[in-house]
Amino acid sequence: MLAKRPFRSEAFGPAAGTGDPPATVISEGTDRMSPIKRSVHCLPTALQEAPAAPFAIRVCAAIAVLAAAAAGAPVAAHAQEGGAPGAAAEEAATTLDGVYSAAQADRGVEVFQNTCIECHFEEDFGQAFLESWVGATVGNLMEDIIATMPEDNPGGLPMANYLDVIAYMLSLNSLPSDDGAELTEQNVVDIEVRPSPPAARAAPAHGASPAPAGKVVSPPLAI
Image (cartoon, rainbow, N blue to C red; front, side, top):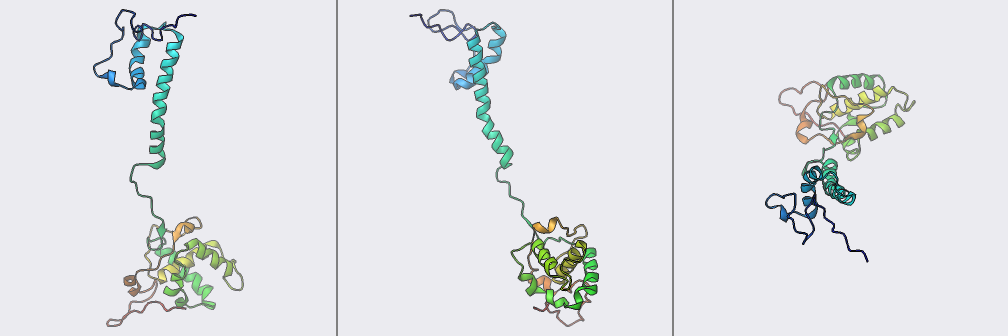
């Protein structure tokens, strides 16, 4: 039977009992490193000092480097997927966030007066109407309006008209507007319907005149 060849080469120091001390000196404290870390620590110096090291040694050293890299890969992947620890998820937009502009609501007034007013009053789209849509999105509301209005020609208006009249409905409920915002066919599917807080309902509806002094503005009438 052939005698087993010592695994270590002179590049990493002779096998136990061969006499000479190791050619590569590891800095103080590295004897407590894990085998993978020790291999990675020694690899650059070893390859420089013994370019002709046996092929098996080079293969083992390469495997050690790959194993060390693979050990850190899951951590890096987790950081990339999950982001910074404790980062809060972005909240969905709601009708309380100023998702339409006053100009869009003004265009909705024209649509309402030219088309909707034949069958509806402004009061039809007050607090009770909006609260019946809580939990849905503005996109759901728009789909329902398109499917049913105008009554004699459902879906017959341009898409912009439907978006504008919904902006007007939101203004009737004293929901905030934003000059930089606009309801679009794309963003309405992500906007949740929320009613205006009680304090905001005392404000005049969009396009309405302020109440005379001493009088209280009532909230929009329910259907």
